[in-house]
Amino acid sequence: MSEWVRDGEIVLREATSGDIADERIDFALHDQVERGYEGALPATRDGLERYAIEVDGRLVGLLGFRRDVPRVGAMVVDDLAIAVVERGHAYGTRALLAAERRLAEDGIGEGFARVPRGNGRGLYIMLRCGYAPNDAFEDEGSGNEGVTWFQRNPALEPTAASASTTRSAAAPLRDTRSRPAHRSSPAG
Image (cartoon, rainbow, N blue to C red):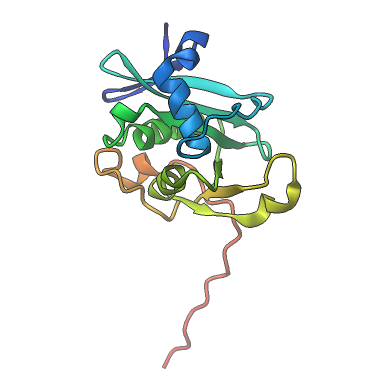
């Protein structure tokens, strides 16, 4: 299978049904809803692209996102699931940052994420990757109940030391929020 993006030892390639059915990945997908969750997984959203995360040829997780959501030129992360035995190596953080760099080449300039509030690890990972909580989509319904929305904030540096050594490599997504006009201080 061909790789979509490579960043050091991290490889993202299109996920297969076998990757998704892998017992470790299935458990991680359930775990991203809430620790110990055993119910049915939420329905897959239209346009979801899923990529297997591999390290040294072994499957360690899954990254899923949709392009041009919630608006053209943006993407939203719906899945970032790392197998339990593979956690603690920043594979999820590094995979997301590699995907952001690749998506920036395709003209995707904004990043968002939806994380169930019962997923403490997911909330932490988004903060670690430079995403900040954003309540702009809280009231739009359609599955947003119990979900925290995040928006990529390019001013925040990701904290995975191995994933971010320079500003340009670590934070490719632009800041599209309006900024206050620069005010010069009066000469005194």
